[in-house]
Image 1 (cartoon, helix red, strand yellow):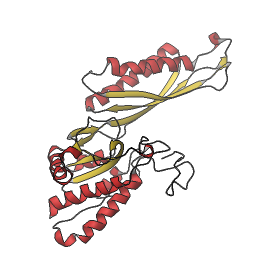
Image 2 (image 1 turned 90 degrees about the vertical axis):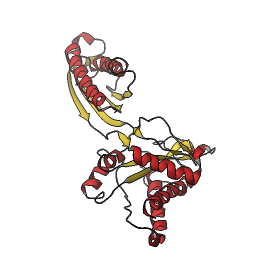
Image 3 (image 1 turned 180 degrees about the horizontal axis):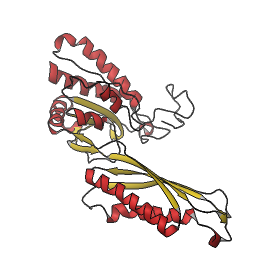
Image 4 (image 1 turned 60 degrees about the horizontal axis):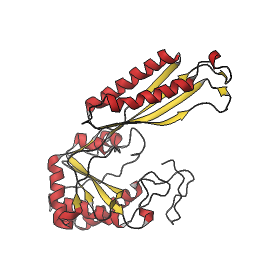
Length: 309
């Protein structure tokens, strides 16, 4: 990810401005371990296991689409994925049926006005006031347009304009993210943003250019496969270690696999009392307790044994 790492560890990034800030290096290491163990056990297993080492989960449109198109799921009956979690205690497994992670879209709006002297605002077309109105109106989508029983997020994460205290600039830029679980809500919010941007053009006398990018769909775990994970893991690690958390607004391109093949996506606890394991994902200090990798191994090997032994 485009983050300057601040961890003082021997495996810190050697490349300025980029780091593993979400755990995917750990996922690859865990899967290599699982491949090693199952290779040693292959005489005891009947069937095949596909190990998916996927690129670009963090970069829309993600690597899963390319992997599916390349045939990684050909002949695959079920699929399972795991993700370390720095807000889940080490030793716990979050296993949930249905929607577990949100669909994620992005929007950006370029506002063209007419700049001028800050002392003569009447001679300008101010893109900042137009942008301010846009931000305020976008916040009303979830509070007034989305069913309160539904879940959605519209967050403006970027507002850039001007570089001097006494100059009204020509342009402003607003950008943000949309997170939803319901397909109809996702479509509605996109249309609402288009409508609001058109209104800002009229009321602000500015010209707006909207770019709306559809990201990953909702991660929806299949009921049967999720139940199998719960049953298998409760026998291995105990009932108290298998929990069910509410859905989260983060996104994952594992959703594309689940649209093609039945399966489930599991969050594996990686946080301890050590503060170094408690930084959130996408943080310059993100790290996790590496025993979580062994717990991913336990999960995957146990599932392989369930299906193939």
